[in-house]
Amino acid sequence: MIDPRKQSLPIPSFPKQSTLLKKEEIPITRAKIGIAAGISILVATPGRLLDHLKNTASFAHNNLRWIIFDEADRILELGYGKEIEEILDVLGSKREGAVGKENALPNHSQSRRQNLLLSATLNEKVNHLANISLKNPVMIGIDETKSSGDLTKPSSKHLSLVGSDIDDEPELLGTLSNCSNADYNLPTQLIQRYVKVPCGTRLVALLSILKSFNEMKASQKVVVFFSTCDAVDFHYSLFSEFQLHSESKIEGQQKKTFLKYKTFRLHGNMEHEGRRTTFQGFKTEKSSLLLCTDVAARGLDFPNVTCIIQYDSPGDASEYVHRVGRTARLGEQGEALLFLQPVEMDYSQELQKHGVTLQEYPLLKVLDSFPLHDQSHHIKKFISIEMHPWVLTLQKALESFISVESKLKQQAKDAFCSWVRAYTAHRGELKRIFMVKKLHLGHVAKSFGLKDQPSLVGGSFQVQFKKRKKEQKQRGVTKRKKIGSK
Image (cartoon, rainbow, N blue to C red):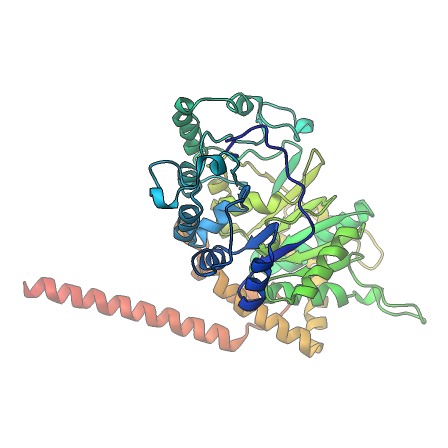
């Protein structure tokens, strides 16, 4: 959304000098020195920017031309709404009537200012920010009536509002308000599917699908999303090292890993240099696999990503949109695959509420395509996935491999612990879908290649569960006593 207060403004060309304000990385003294020396581009977190606006005397912003709020929805979700309003107040960027005269910029300065809100999804908080910060706003996006190959052009319906008078503004803002409840407009060239897989066979299913992708086409770039950093680290180590017995070192030949991808990992606990190396490596490799958390769901543009796999379901439907947005970009083809356990199938209905319809992925057909002992096998159609010969063989190989690798086994246990914690952290309506008590923790352990459920985590969880049940029962007895006493 753009505030076209002066439509003839050219896009400025900035010199190279810039300053990054981030409290945890750059000392405050260095930031102040940079501000005092004069800068053209300032990148900052809301809290740190507000602090300098209020307390740094040398921070001159009278000639400010552009204010950009990138990932506006996420900034507001993190609780920075009040800081953003104060920043707009100090800069004199609130709309007339919402800011005192002492903070308002002169008219000639306001006419040179443009505010931009960048967000892939709209919600009520973003609409509120648009209301207080934008004058005659213009929405720039993809017109759902246009073809998938015409993605770079903004909607002609929205462009017609560029020269609108102030009287037309309420109509446009009303349109923005309705967007939060509308269907998600995903690219038509994006193939969206789900794979229904029992908990204990999730790991085998993931490996099998990745291997089938690689065998279908040599050049594949796949992104797999996990819920925790520990899960990323475990799967990265496993995928980088695991090989079947038939692929082990024979007669002096070099060992071949089960997956032929160049594998990368990316999560928030990595050092900055490691994240940079991952970004550049995955971007340049023709056939590569990226294992990541939601840190890669926004703001990263990886070219030629062919498939997005959501191994762990996103926290809400809007995060699903951000994840799949890493593929099918600018008219390119893409595929999205969501893993769901049988007890989680109601999640697909949550997506359907926003116009996202998923087709089932033919997992059994993929499993049937893998031969055993160099012989093709014929499986009856009614056989369950858990008892499939390929699943049993690969699961046994994974458990044997992990059990003898002490470091990998510990990583599997850590990933198991963090996964259970993350599973219990779903909010709102999703709590009734993602319930740990519906799961068999022994099967969860199998999904991390563990032969046995880690006793500490399983025991502590059961203790906590029984403790909650006991407390609930005691509260019920107490309540009944109080009612009886009355």
